[in-house]
Length: 391
Image: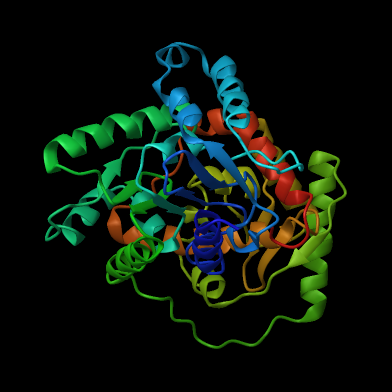
């Protein structure tokens, strides 16, 4: 096994095991070989924690990947034509013995022009800022003493146009500071760090999280009596029936309790209001169908009406449900449920923290529509739902 691949597995496993850094199949990592000819990168839909010597990565010819981002003709195509073309070209750039048909990350062309080691994560602490109306200004305060501050990237639809946007911003940054940014923070998205060694990249992750967390308080929860099993069973039944009545799908309903972040959120007087916005980021929309639905009651009729209202507005029916006093429930295939719960729990924390920085900033209609119609995201969700556990 090459050093580049060994390092890729190392940084992936270390960051992927921490659900405060990345949830489900989200996030990406890449490492370029010493000769500059190849780049090892996470395969689409793979959970970072599950990457191994045999699975979860692809090796790509770096020149072929860079040719995608340099192709001026692609930018002139409409998204429906451009994005499948980009996916095909990235797949053709793969040069390895992988026989599974795994796709390289859809962000491969973005990773290609950054430093040797790249780690892209969706930390909950970062979400508190990138999903807050005044988040950018707060980040500037946090990093004001840095000689080389993070590069802020305004939200752009993922895929080719995001890569082009970042390429241009990186050029501007290099012209201004004489070097490429080591830290990039993407609005409504997450964190990129890039460095010359694996250790340096991991140190950057720790540094950024420590600094951003310094302004965030962990939720405090007073102890309450556990909910009765009969109430949990009744809630499961009501949610399951409502999902079937609204969508025609018979889905199992799993109960994920009321751990500290969940209990703290339920205790907020503005809990329902905070969940009334759209999805915070692409992952919440792709994997969880958007934010959890707040329920004061769990009778099937009430839930069905709420689900029908969402569908009538052109939104996806909720997969996660936060029942007052009981906790978090997820209506989804058993393999997908833990991922949805993971993402939803992080979202609850982000929404709470964002109130400190001007309020929640979620995806708008156009941004949601792009994600909903992007084949690459549908492919990613399909992979997660077809694997065991959270992978």
